[in-house]
Length: 157
Image (cartoon, one colour):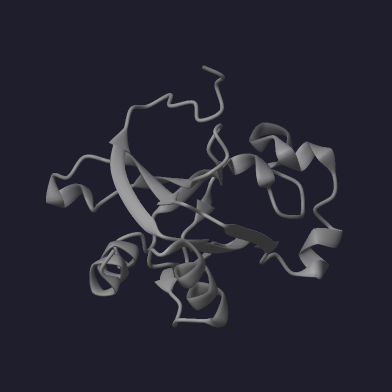
């Protein structure tokens, strides 16, 4: 995949919401489900987009929530929006993370060179940052498609 095109696609994710991320049920590709919205004045309807990072050989997820916030966010009532809304701490139960500062393509690395040489196809590395997680993915191709409301990525076939 052309790196300039990849960078443009990733730029379009800024300030939307990640509602799910993880390996697909066949465990080769990594998907990030984004709820994309626009200013209502544009007339663009909100949509759910599936960013499918194909041939994902590495996926690393780390928290971006500071330890001080984690410390006050351990109460299980915070995993439900209704029971956690009036509590101090991070309300995990909102069930989405703001894509801020967003997604960006990282420079070529030893890892991307290694996998490109080993498999004979080009590899890329991307960092996706939200207000709660930082994802780093090593992959070869990206496909973006609109998905229907209620899409269930981990339903067994």
